[in-house]
Image 1: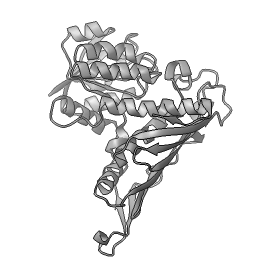
Image 2: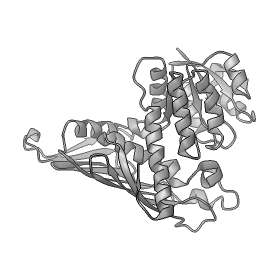
Image 3: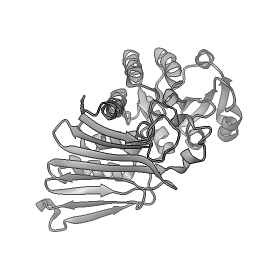
Image 4: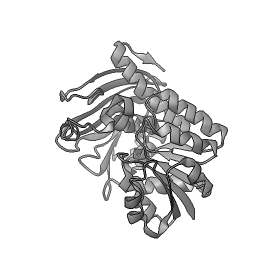
Length: 342
């Protein structure tokens, strides 16, 4: 049984899904609650019920109550490093809502601190554990599409979240608080997932960004990112707030003997085509799922189990550094008009 810390604040993202995970996972016995402003305690206690431990406004108070097995940190990105740093100093494993920083240098520092204190630092990039991703990765690792040629991915979300708060934009639309826009908040999921799928790091990035919707924000609502993997294959990501509701997202991976694709926003299925003789003449296959799967509760379950030593972590601090470098290389490329080599 585990004790976790839930560290959040007013305006932080995905608070309720994390509370729900704490409530629903039998693995978690107790949750210590921290909020520097104290405004979220009522909602947290109402959800986690008898699992609620103490309430704290500082990391020092939290740690004085005992070292948790893992801290879930969901904070405004600009505020996250100052909370994560003392936790890692104390050797506490941390699962942090992305991006957990406003520039990659901050996260590089945190990753070094985690390594120095034998602590995990895991960004909440839960797309890794979706069933279609797991199956696609297995197919690719098993030479199911041959040599890697190219990848493409789409992450399109709702423009309405910007338009309904034009006079008071959410922190995710303020560069000083978020570090970037759609790419650093949602496109980052696809960039991490693609490297995870194909087992290669992104080595070069070229990008263009825009405020396609014309909103008075100082971060992008649209990014087109092209990139090259370490092995030479090319990729492209279409990342933006463009629809009236959450909409199009998915990936396709092309190889010398076939392809594999999923469109999670439209169908709970994975399609696979291969001309390999191993397919025994059945070249086209389809995997269907009962819902998208994955999500916050399974992700919290896996990260807690990793912190208890039962399984390997689903993501490492180094993985987080790598994807954040890609995101900020894309911003650098968009600003300079030049490709950026990582």
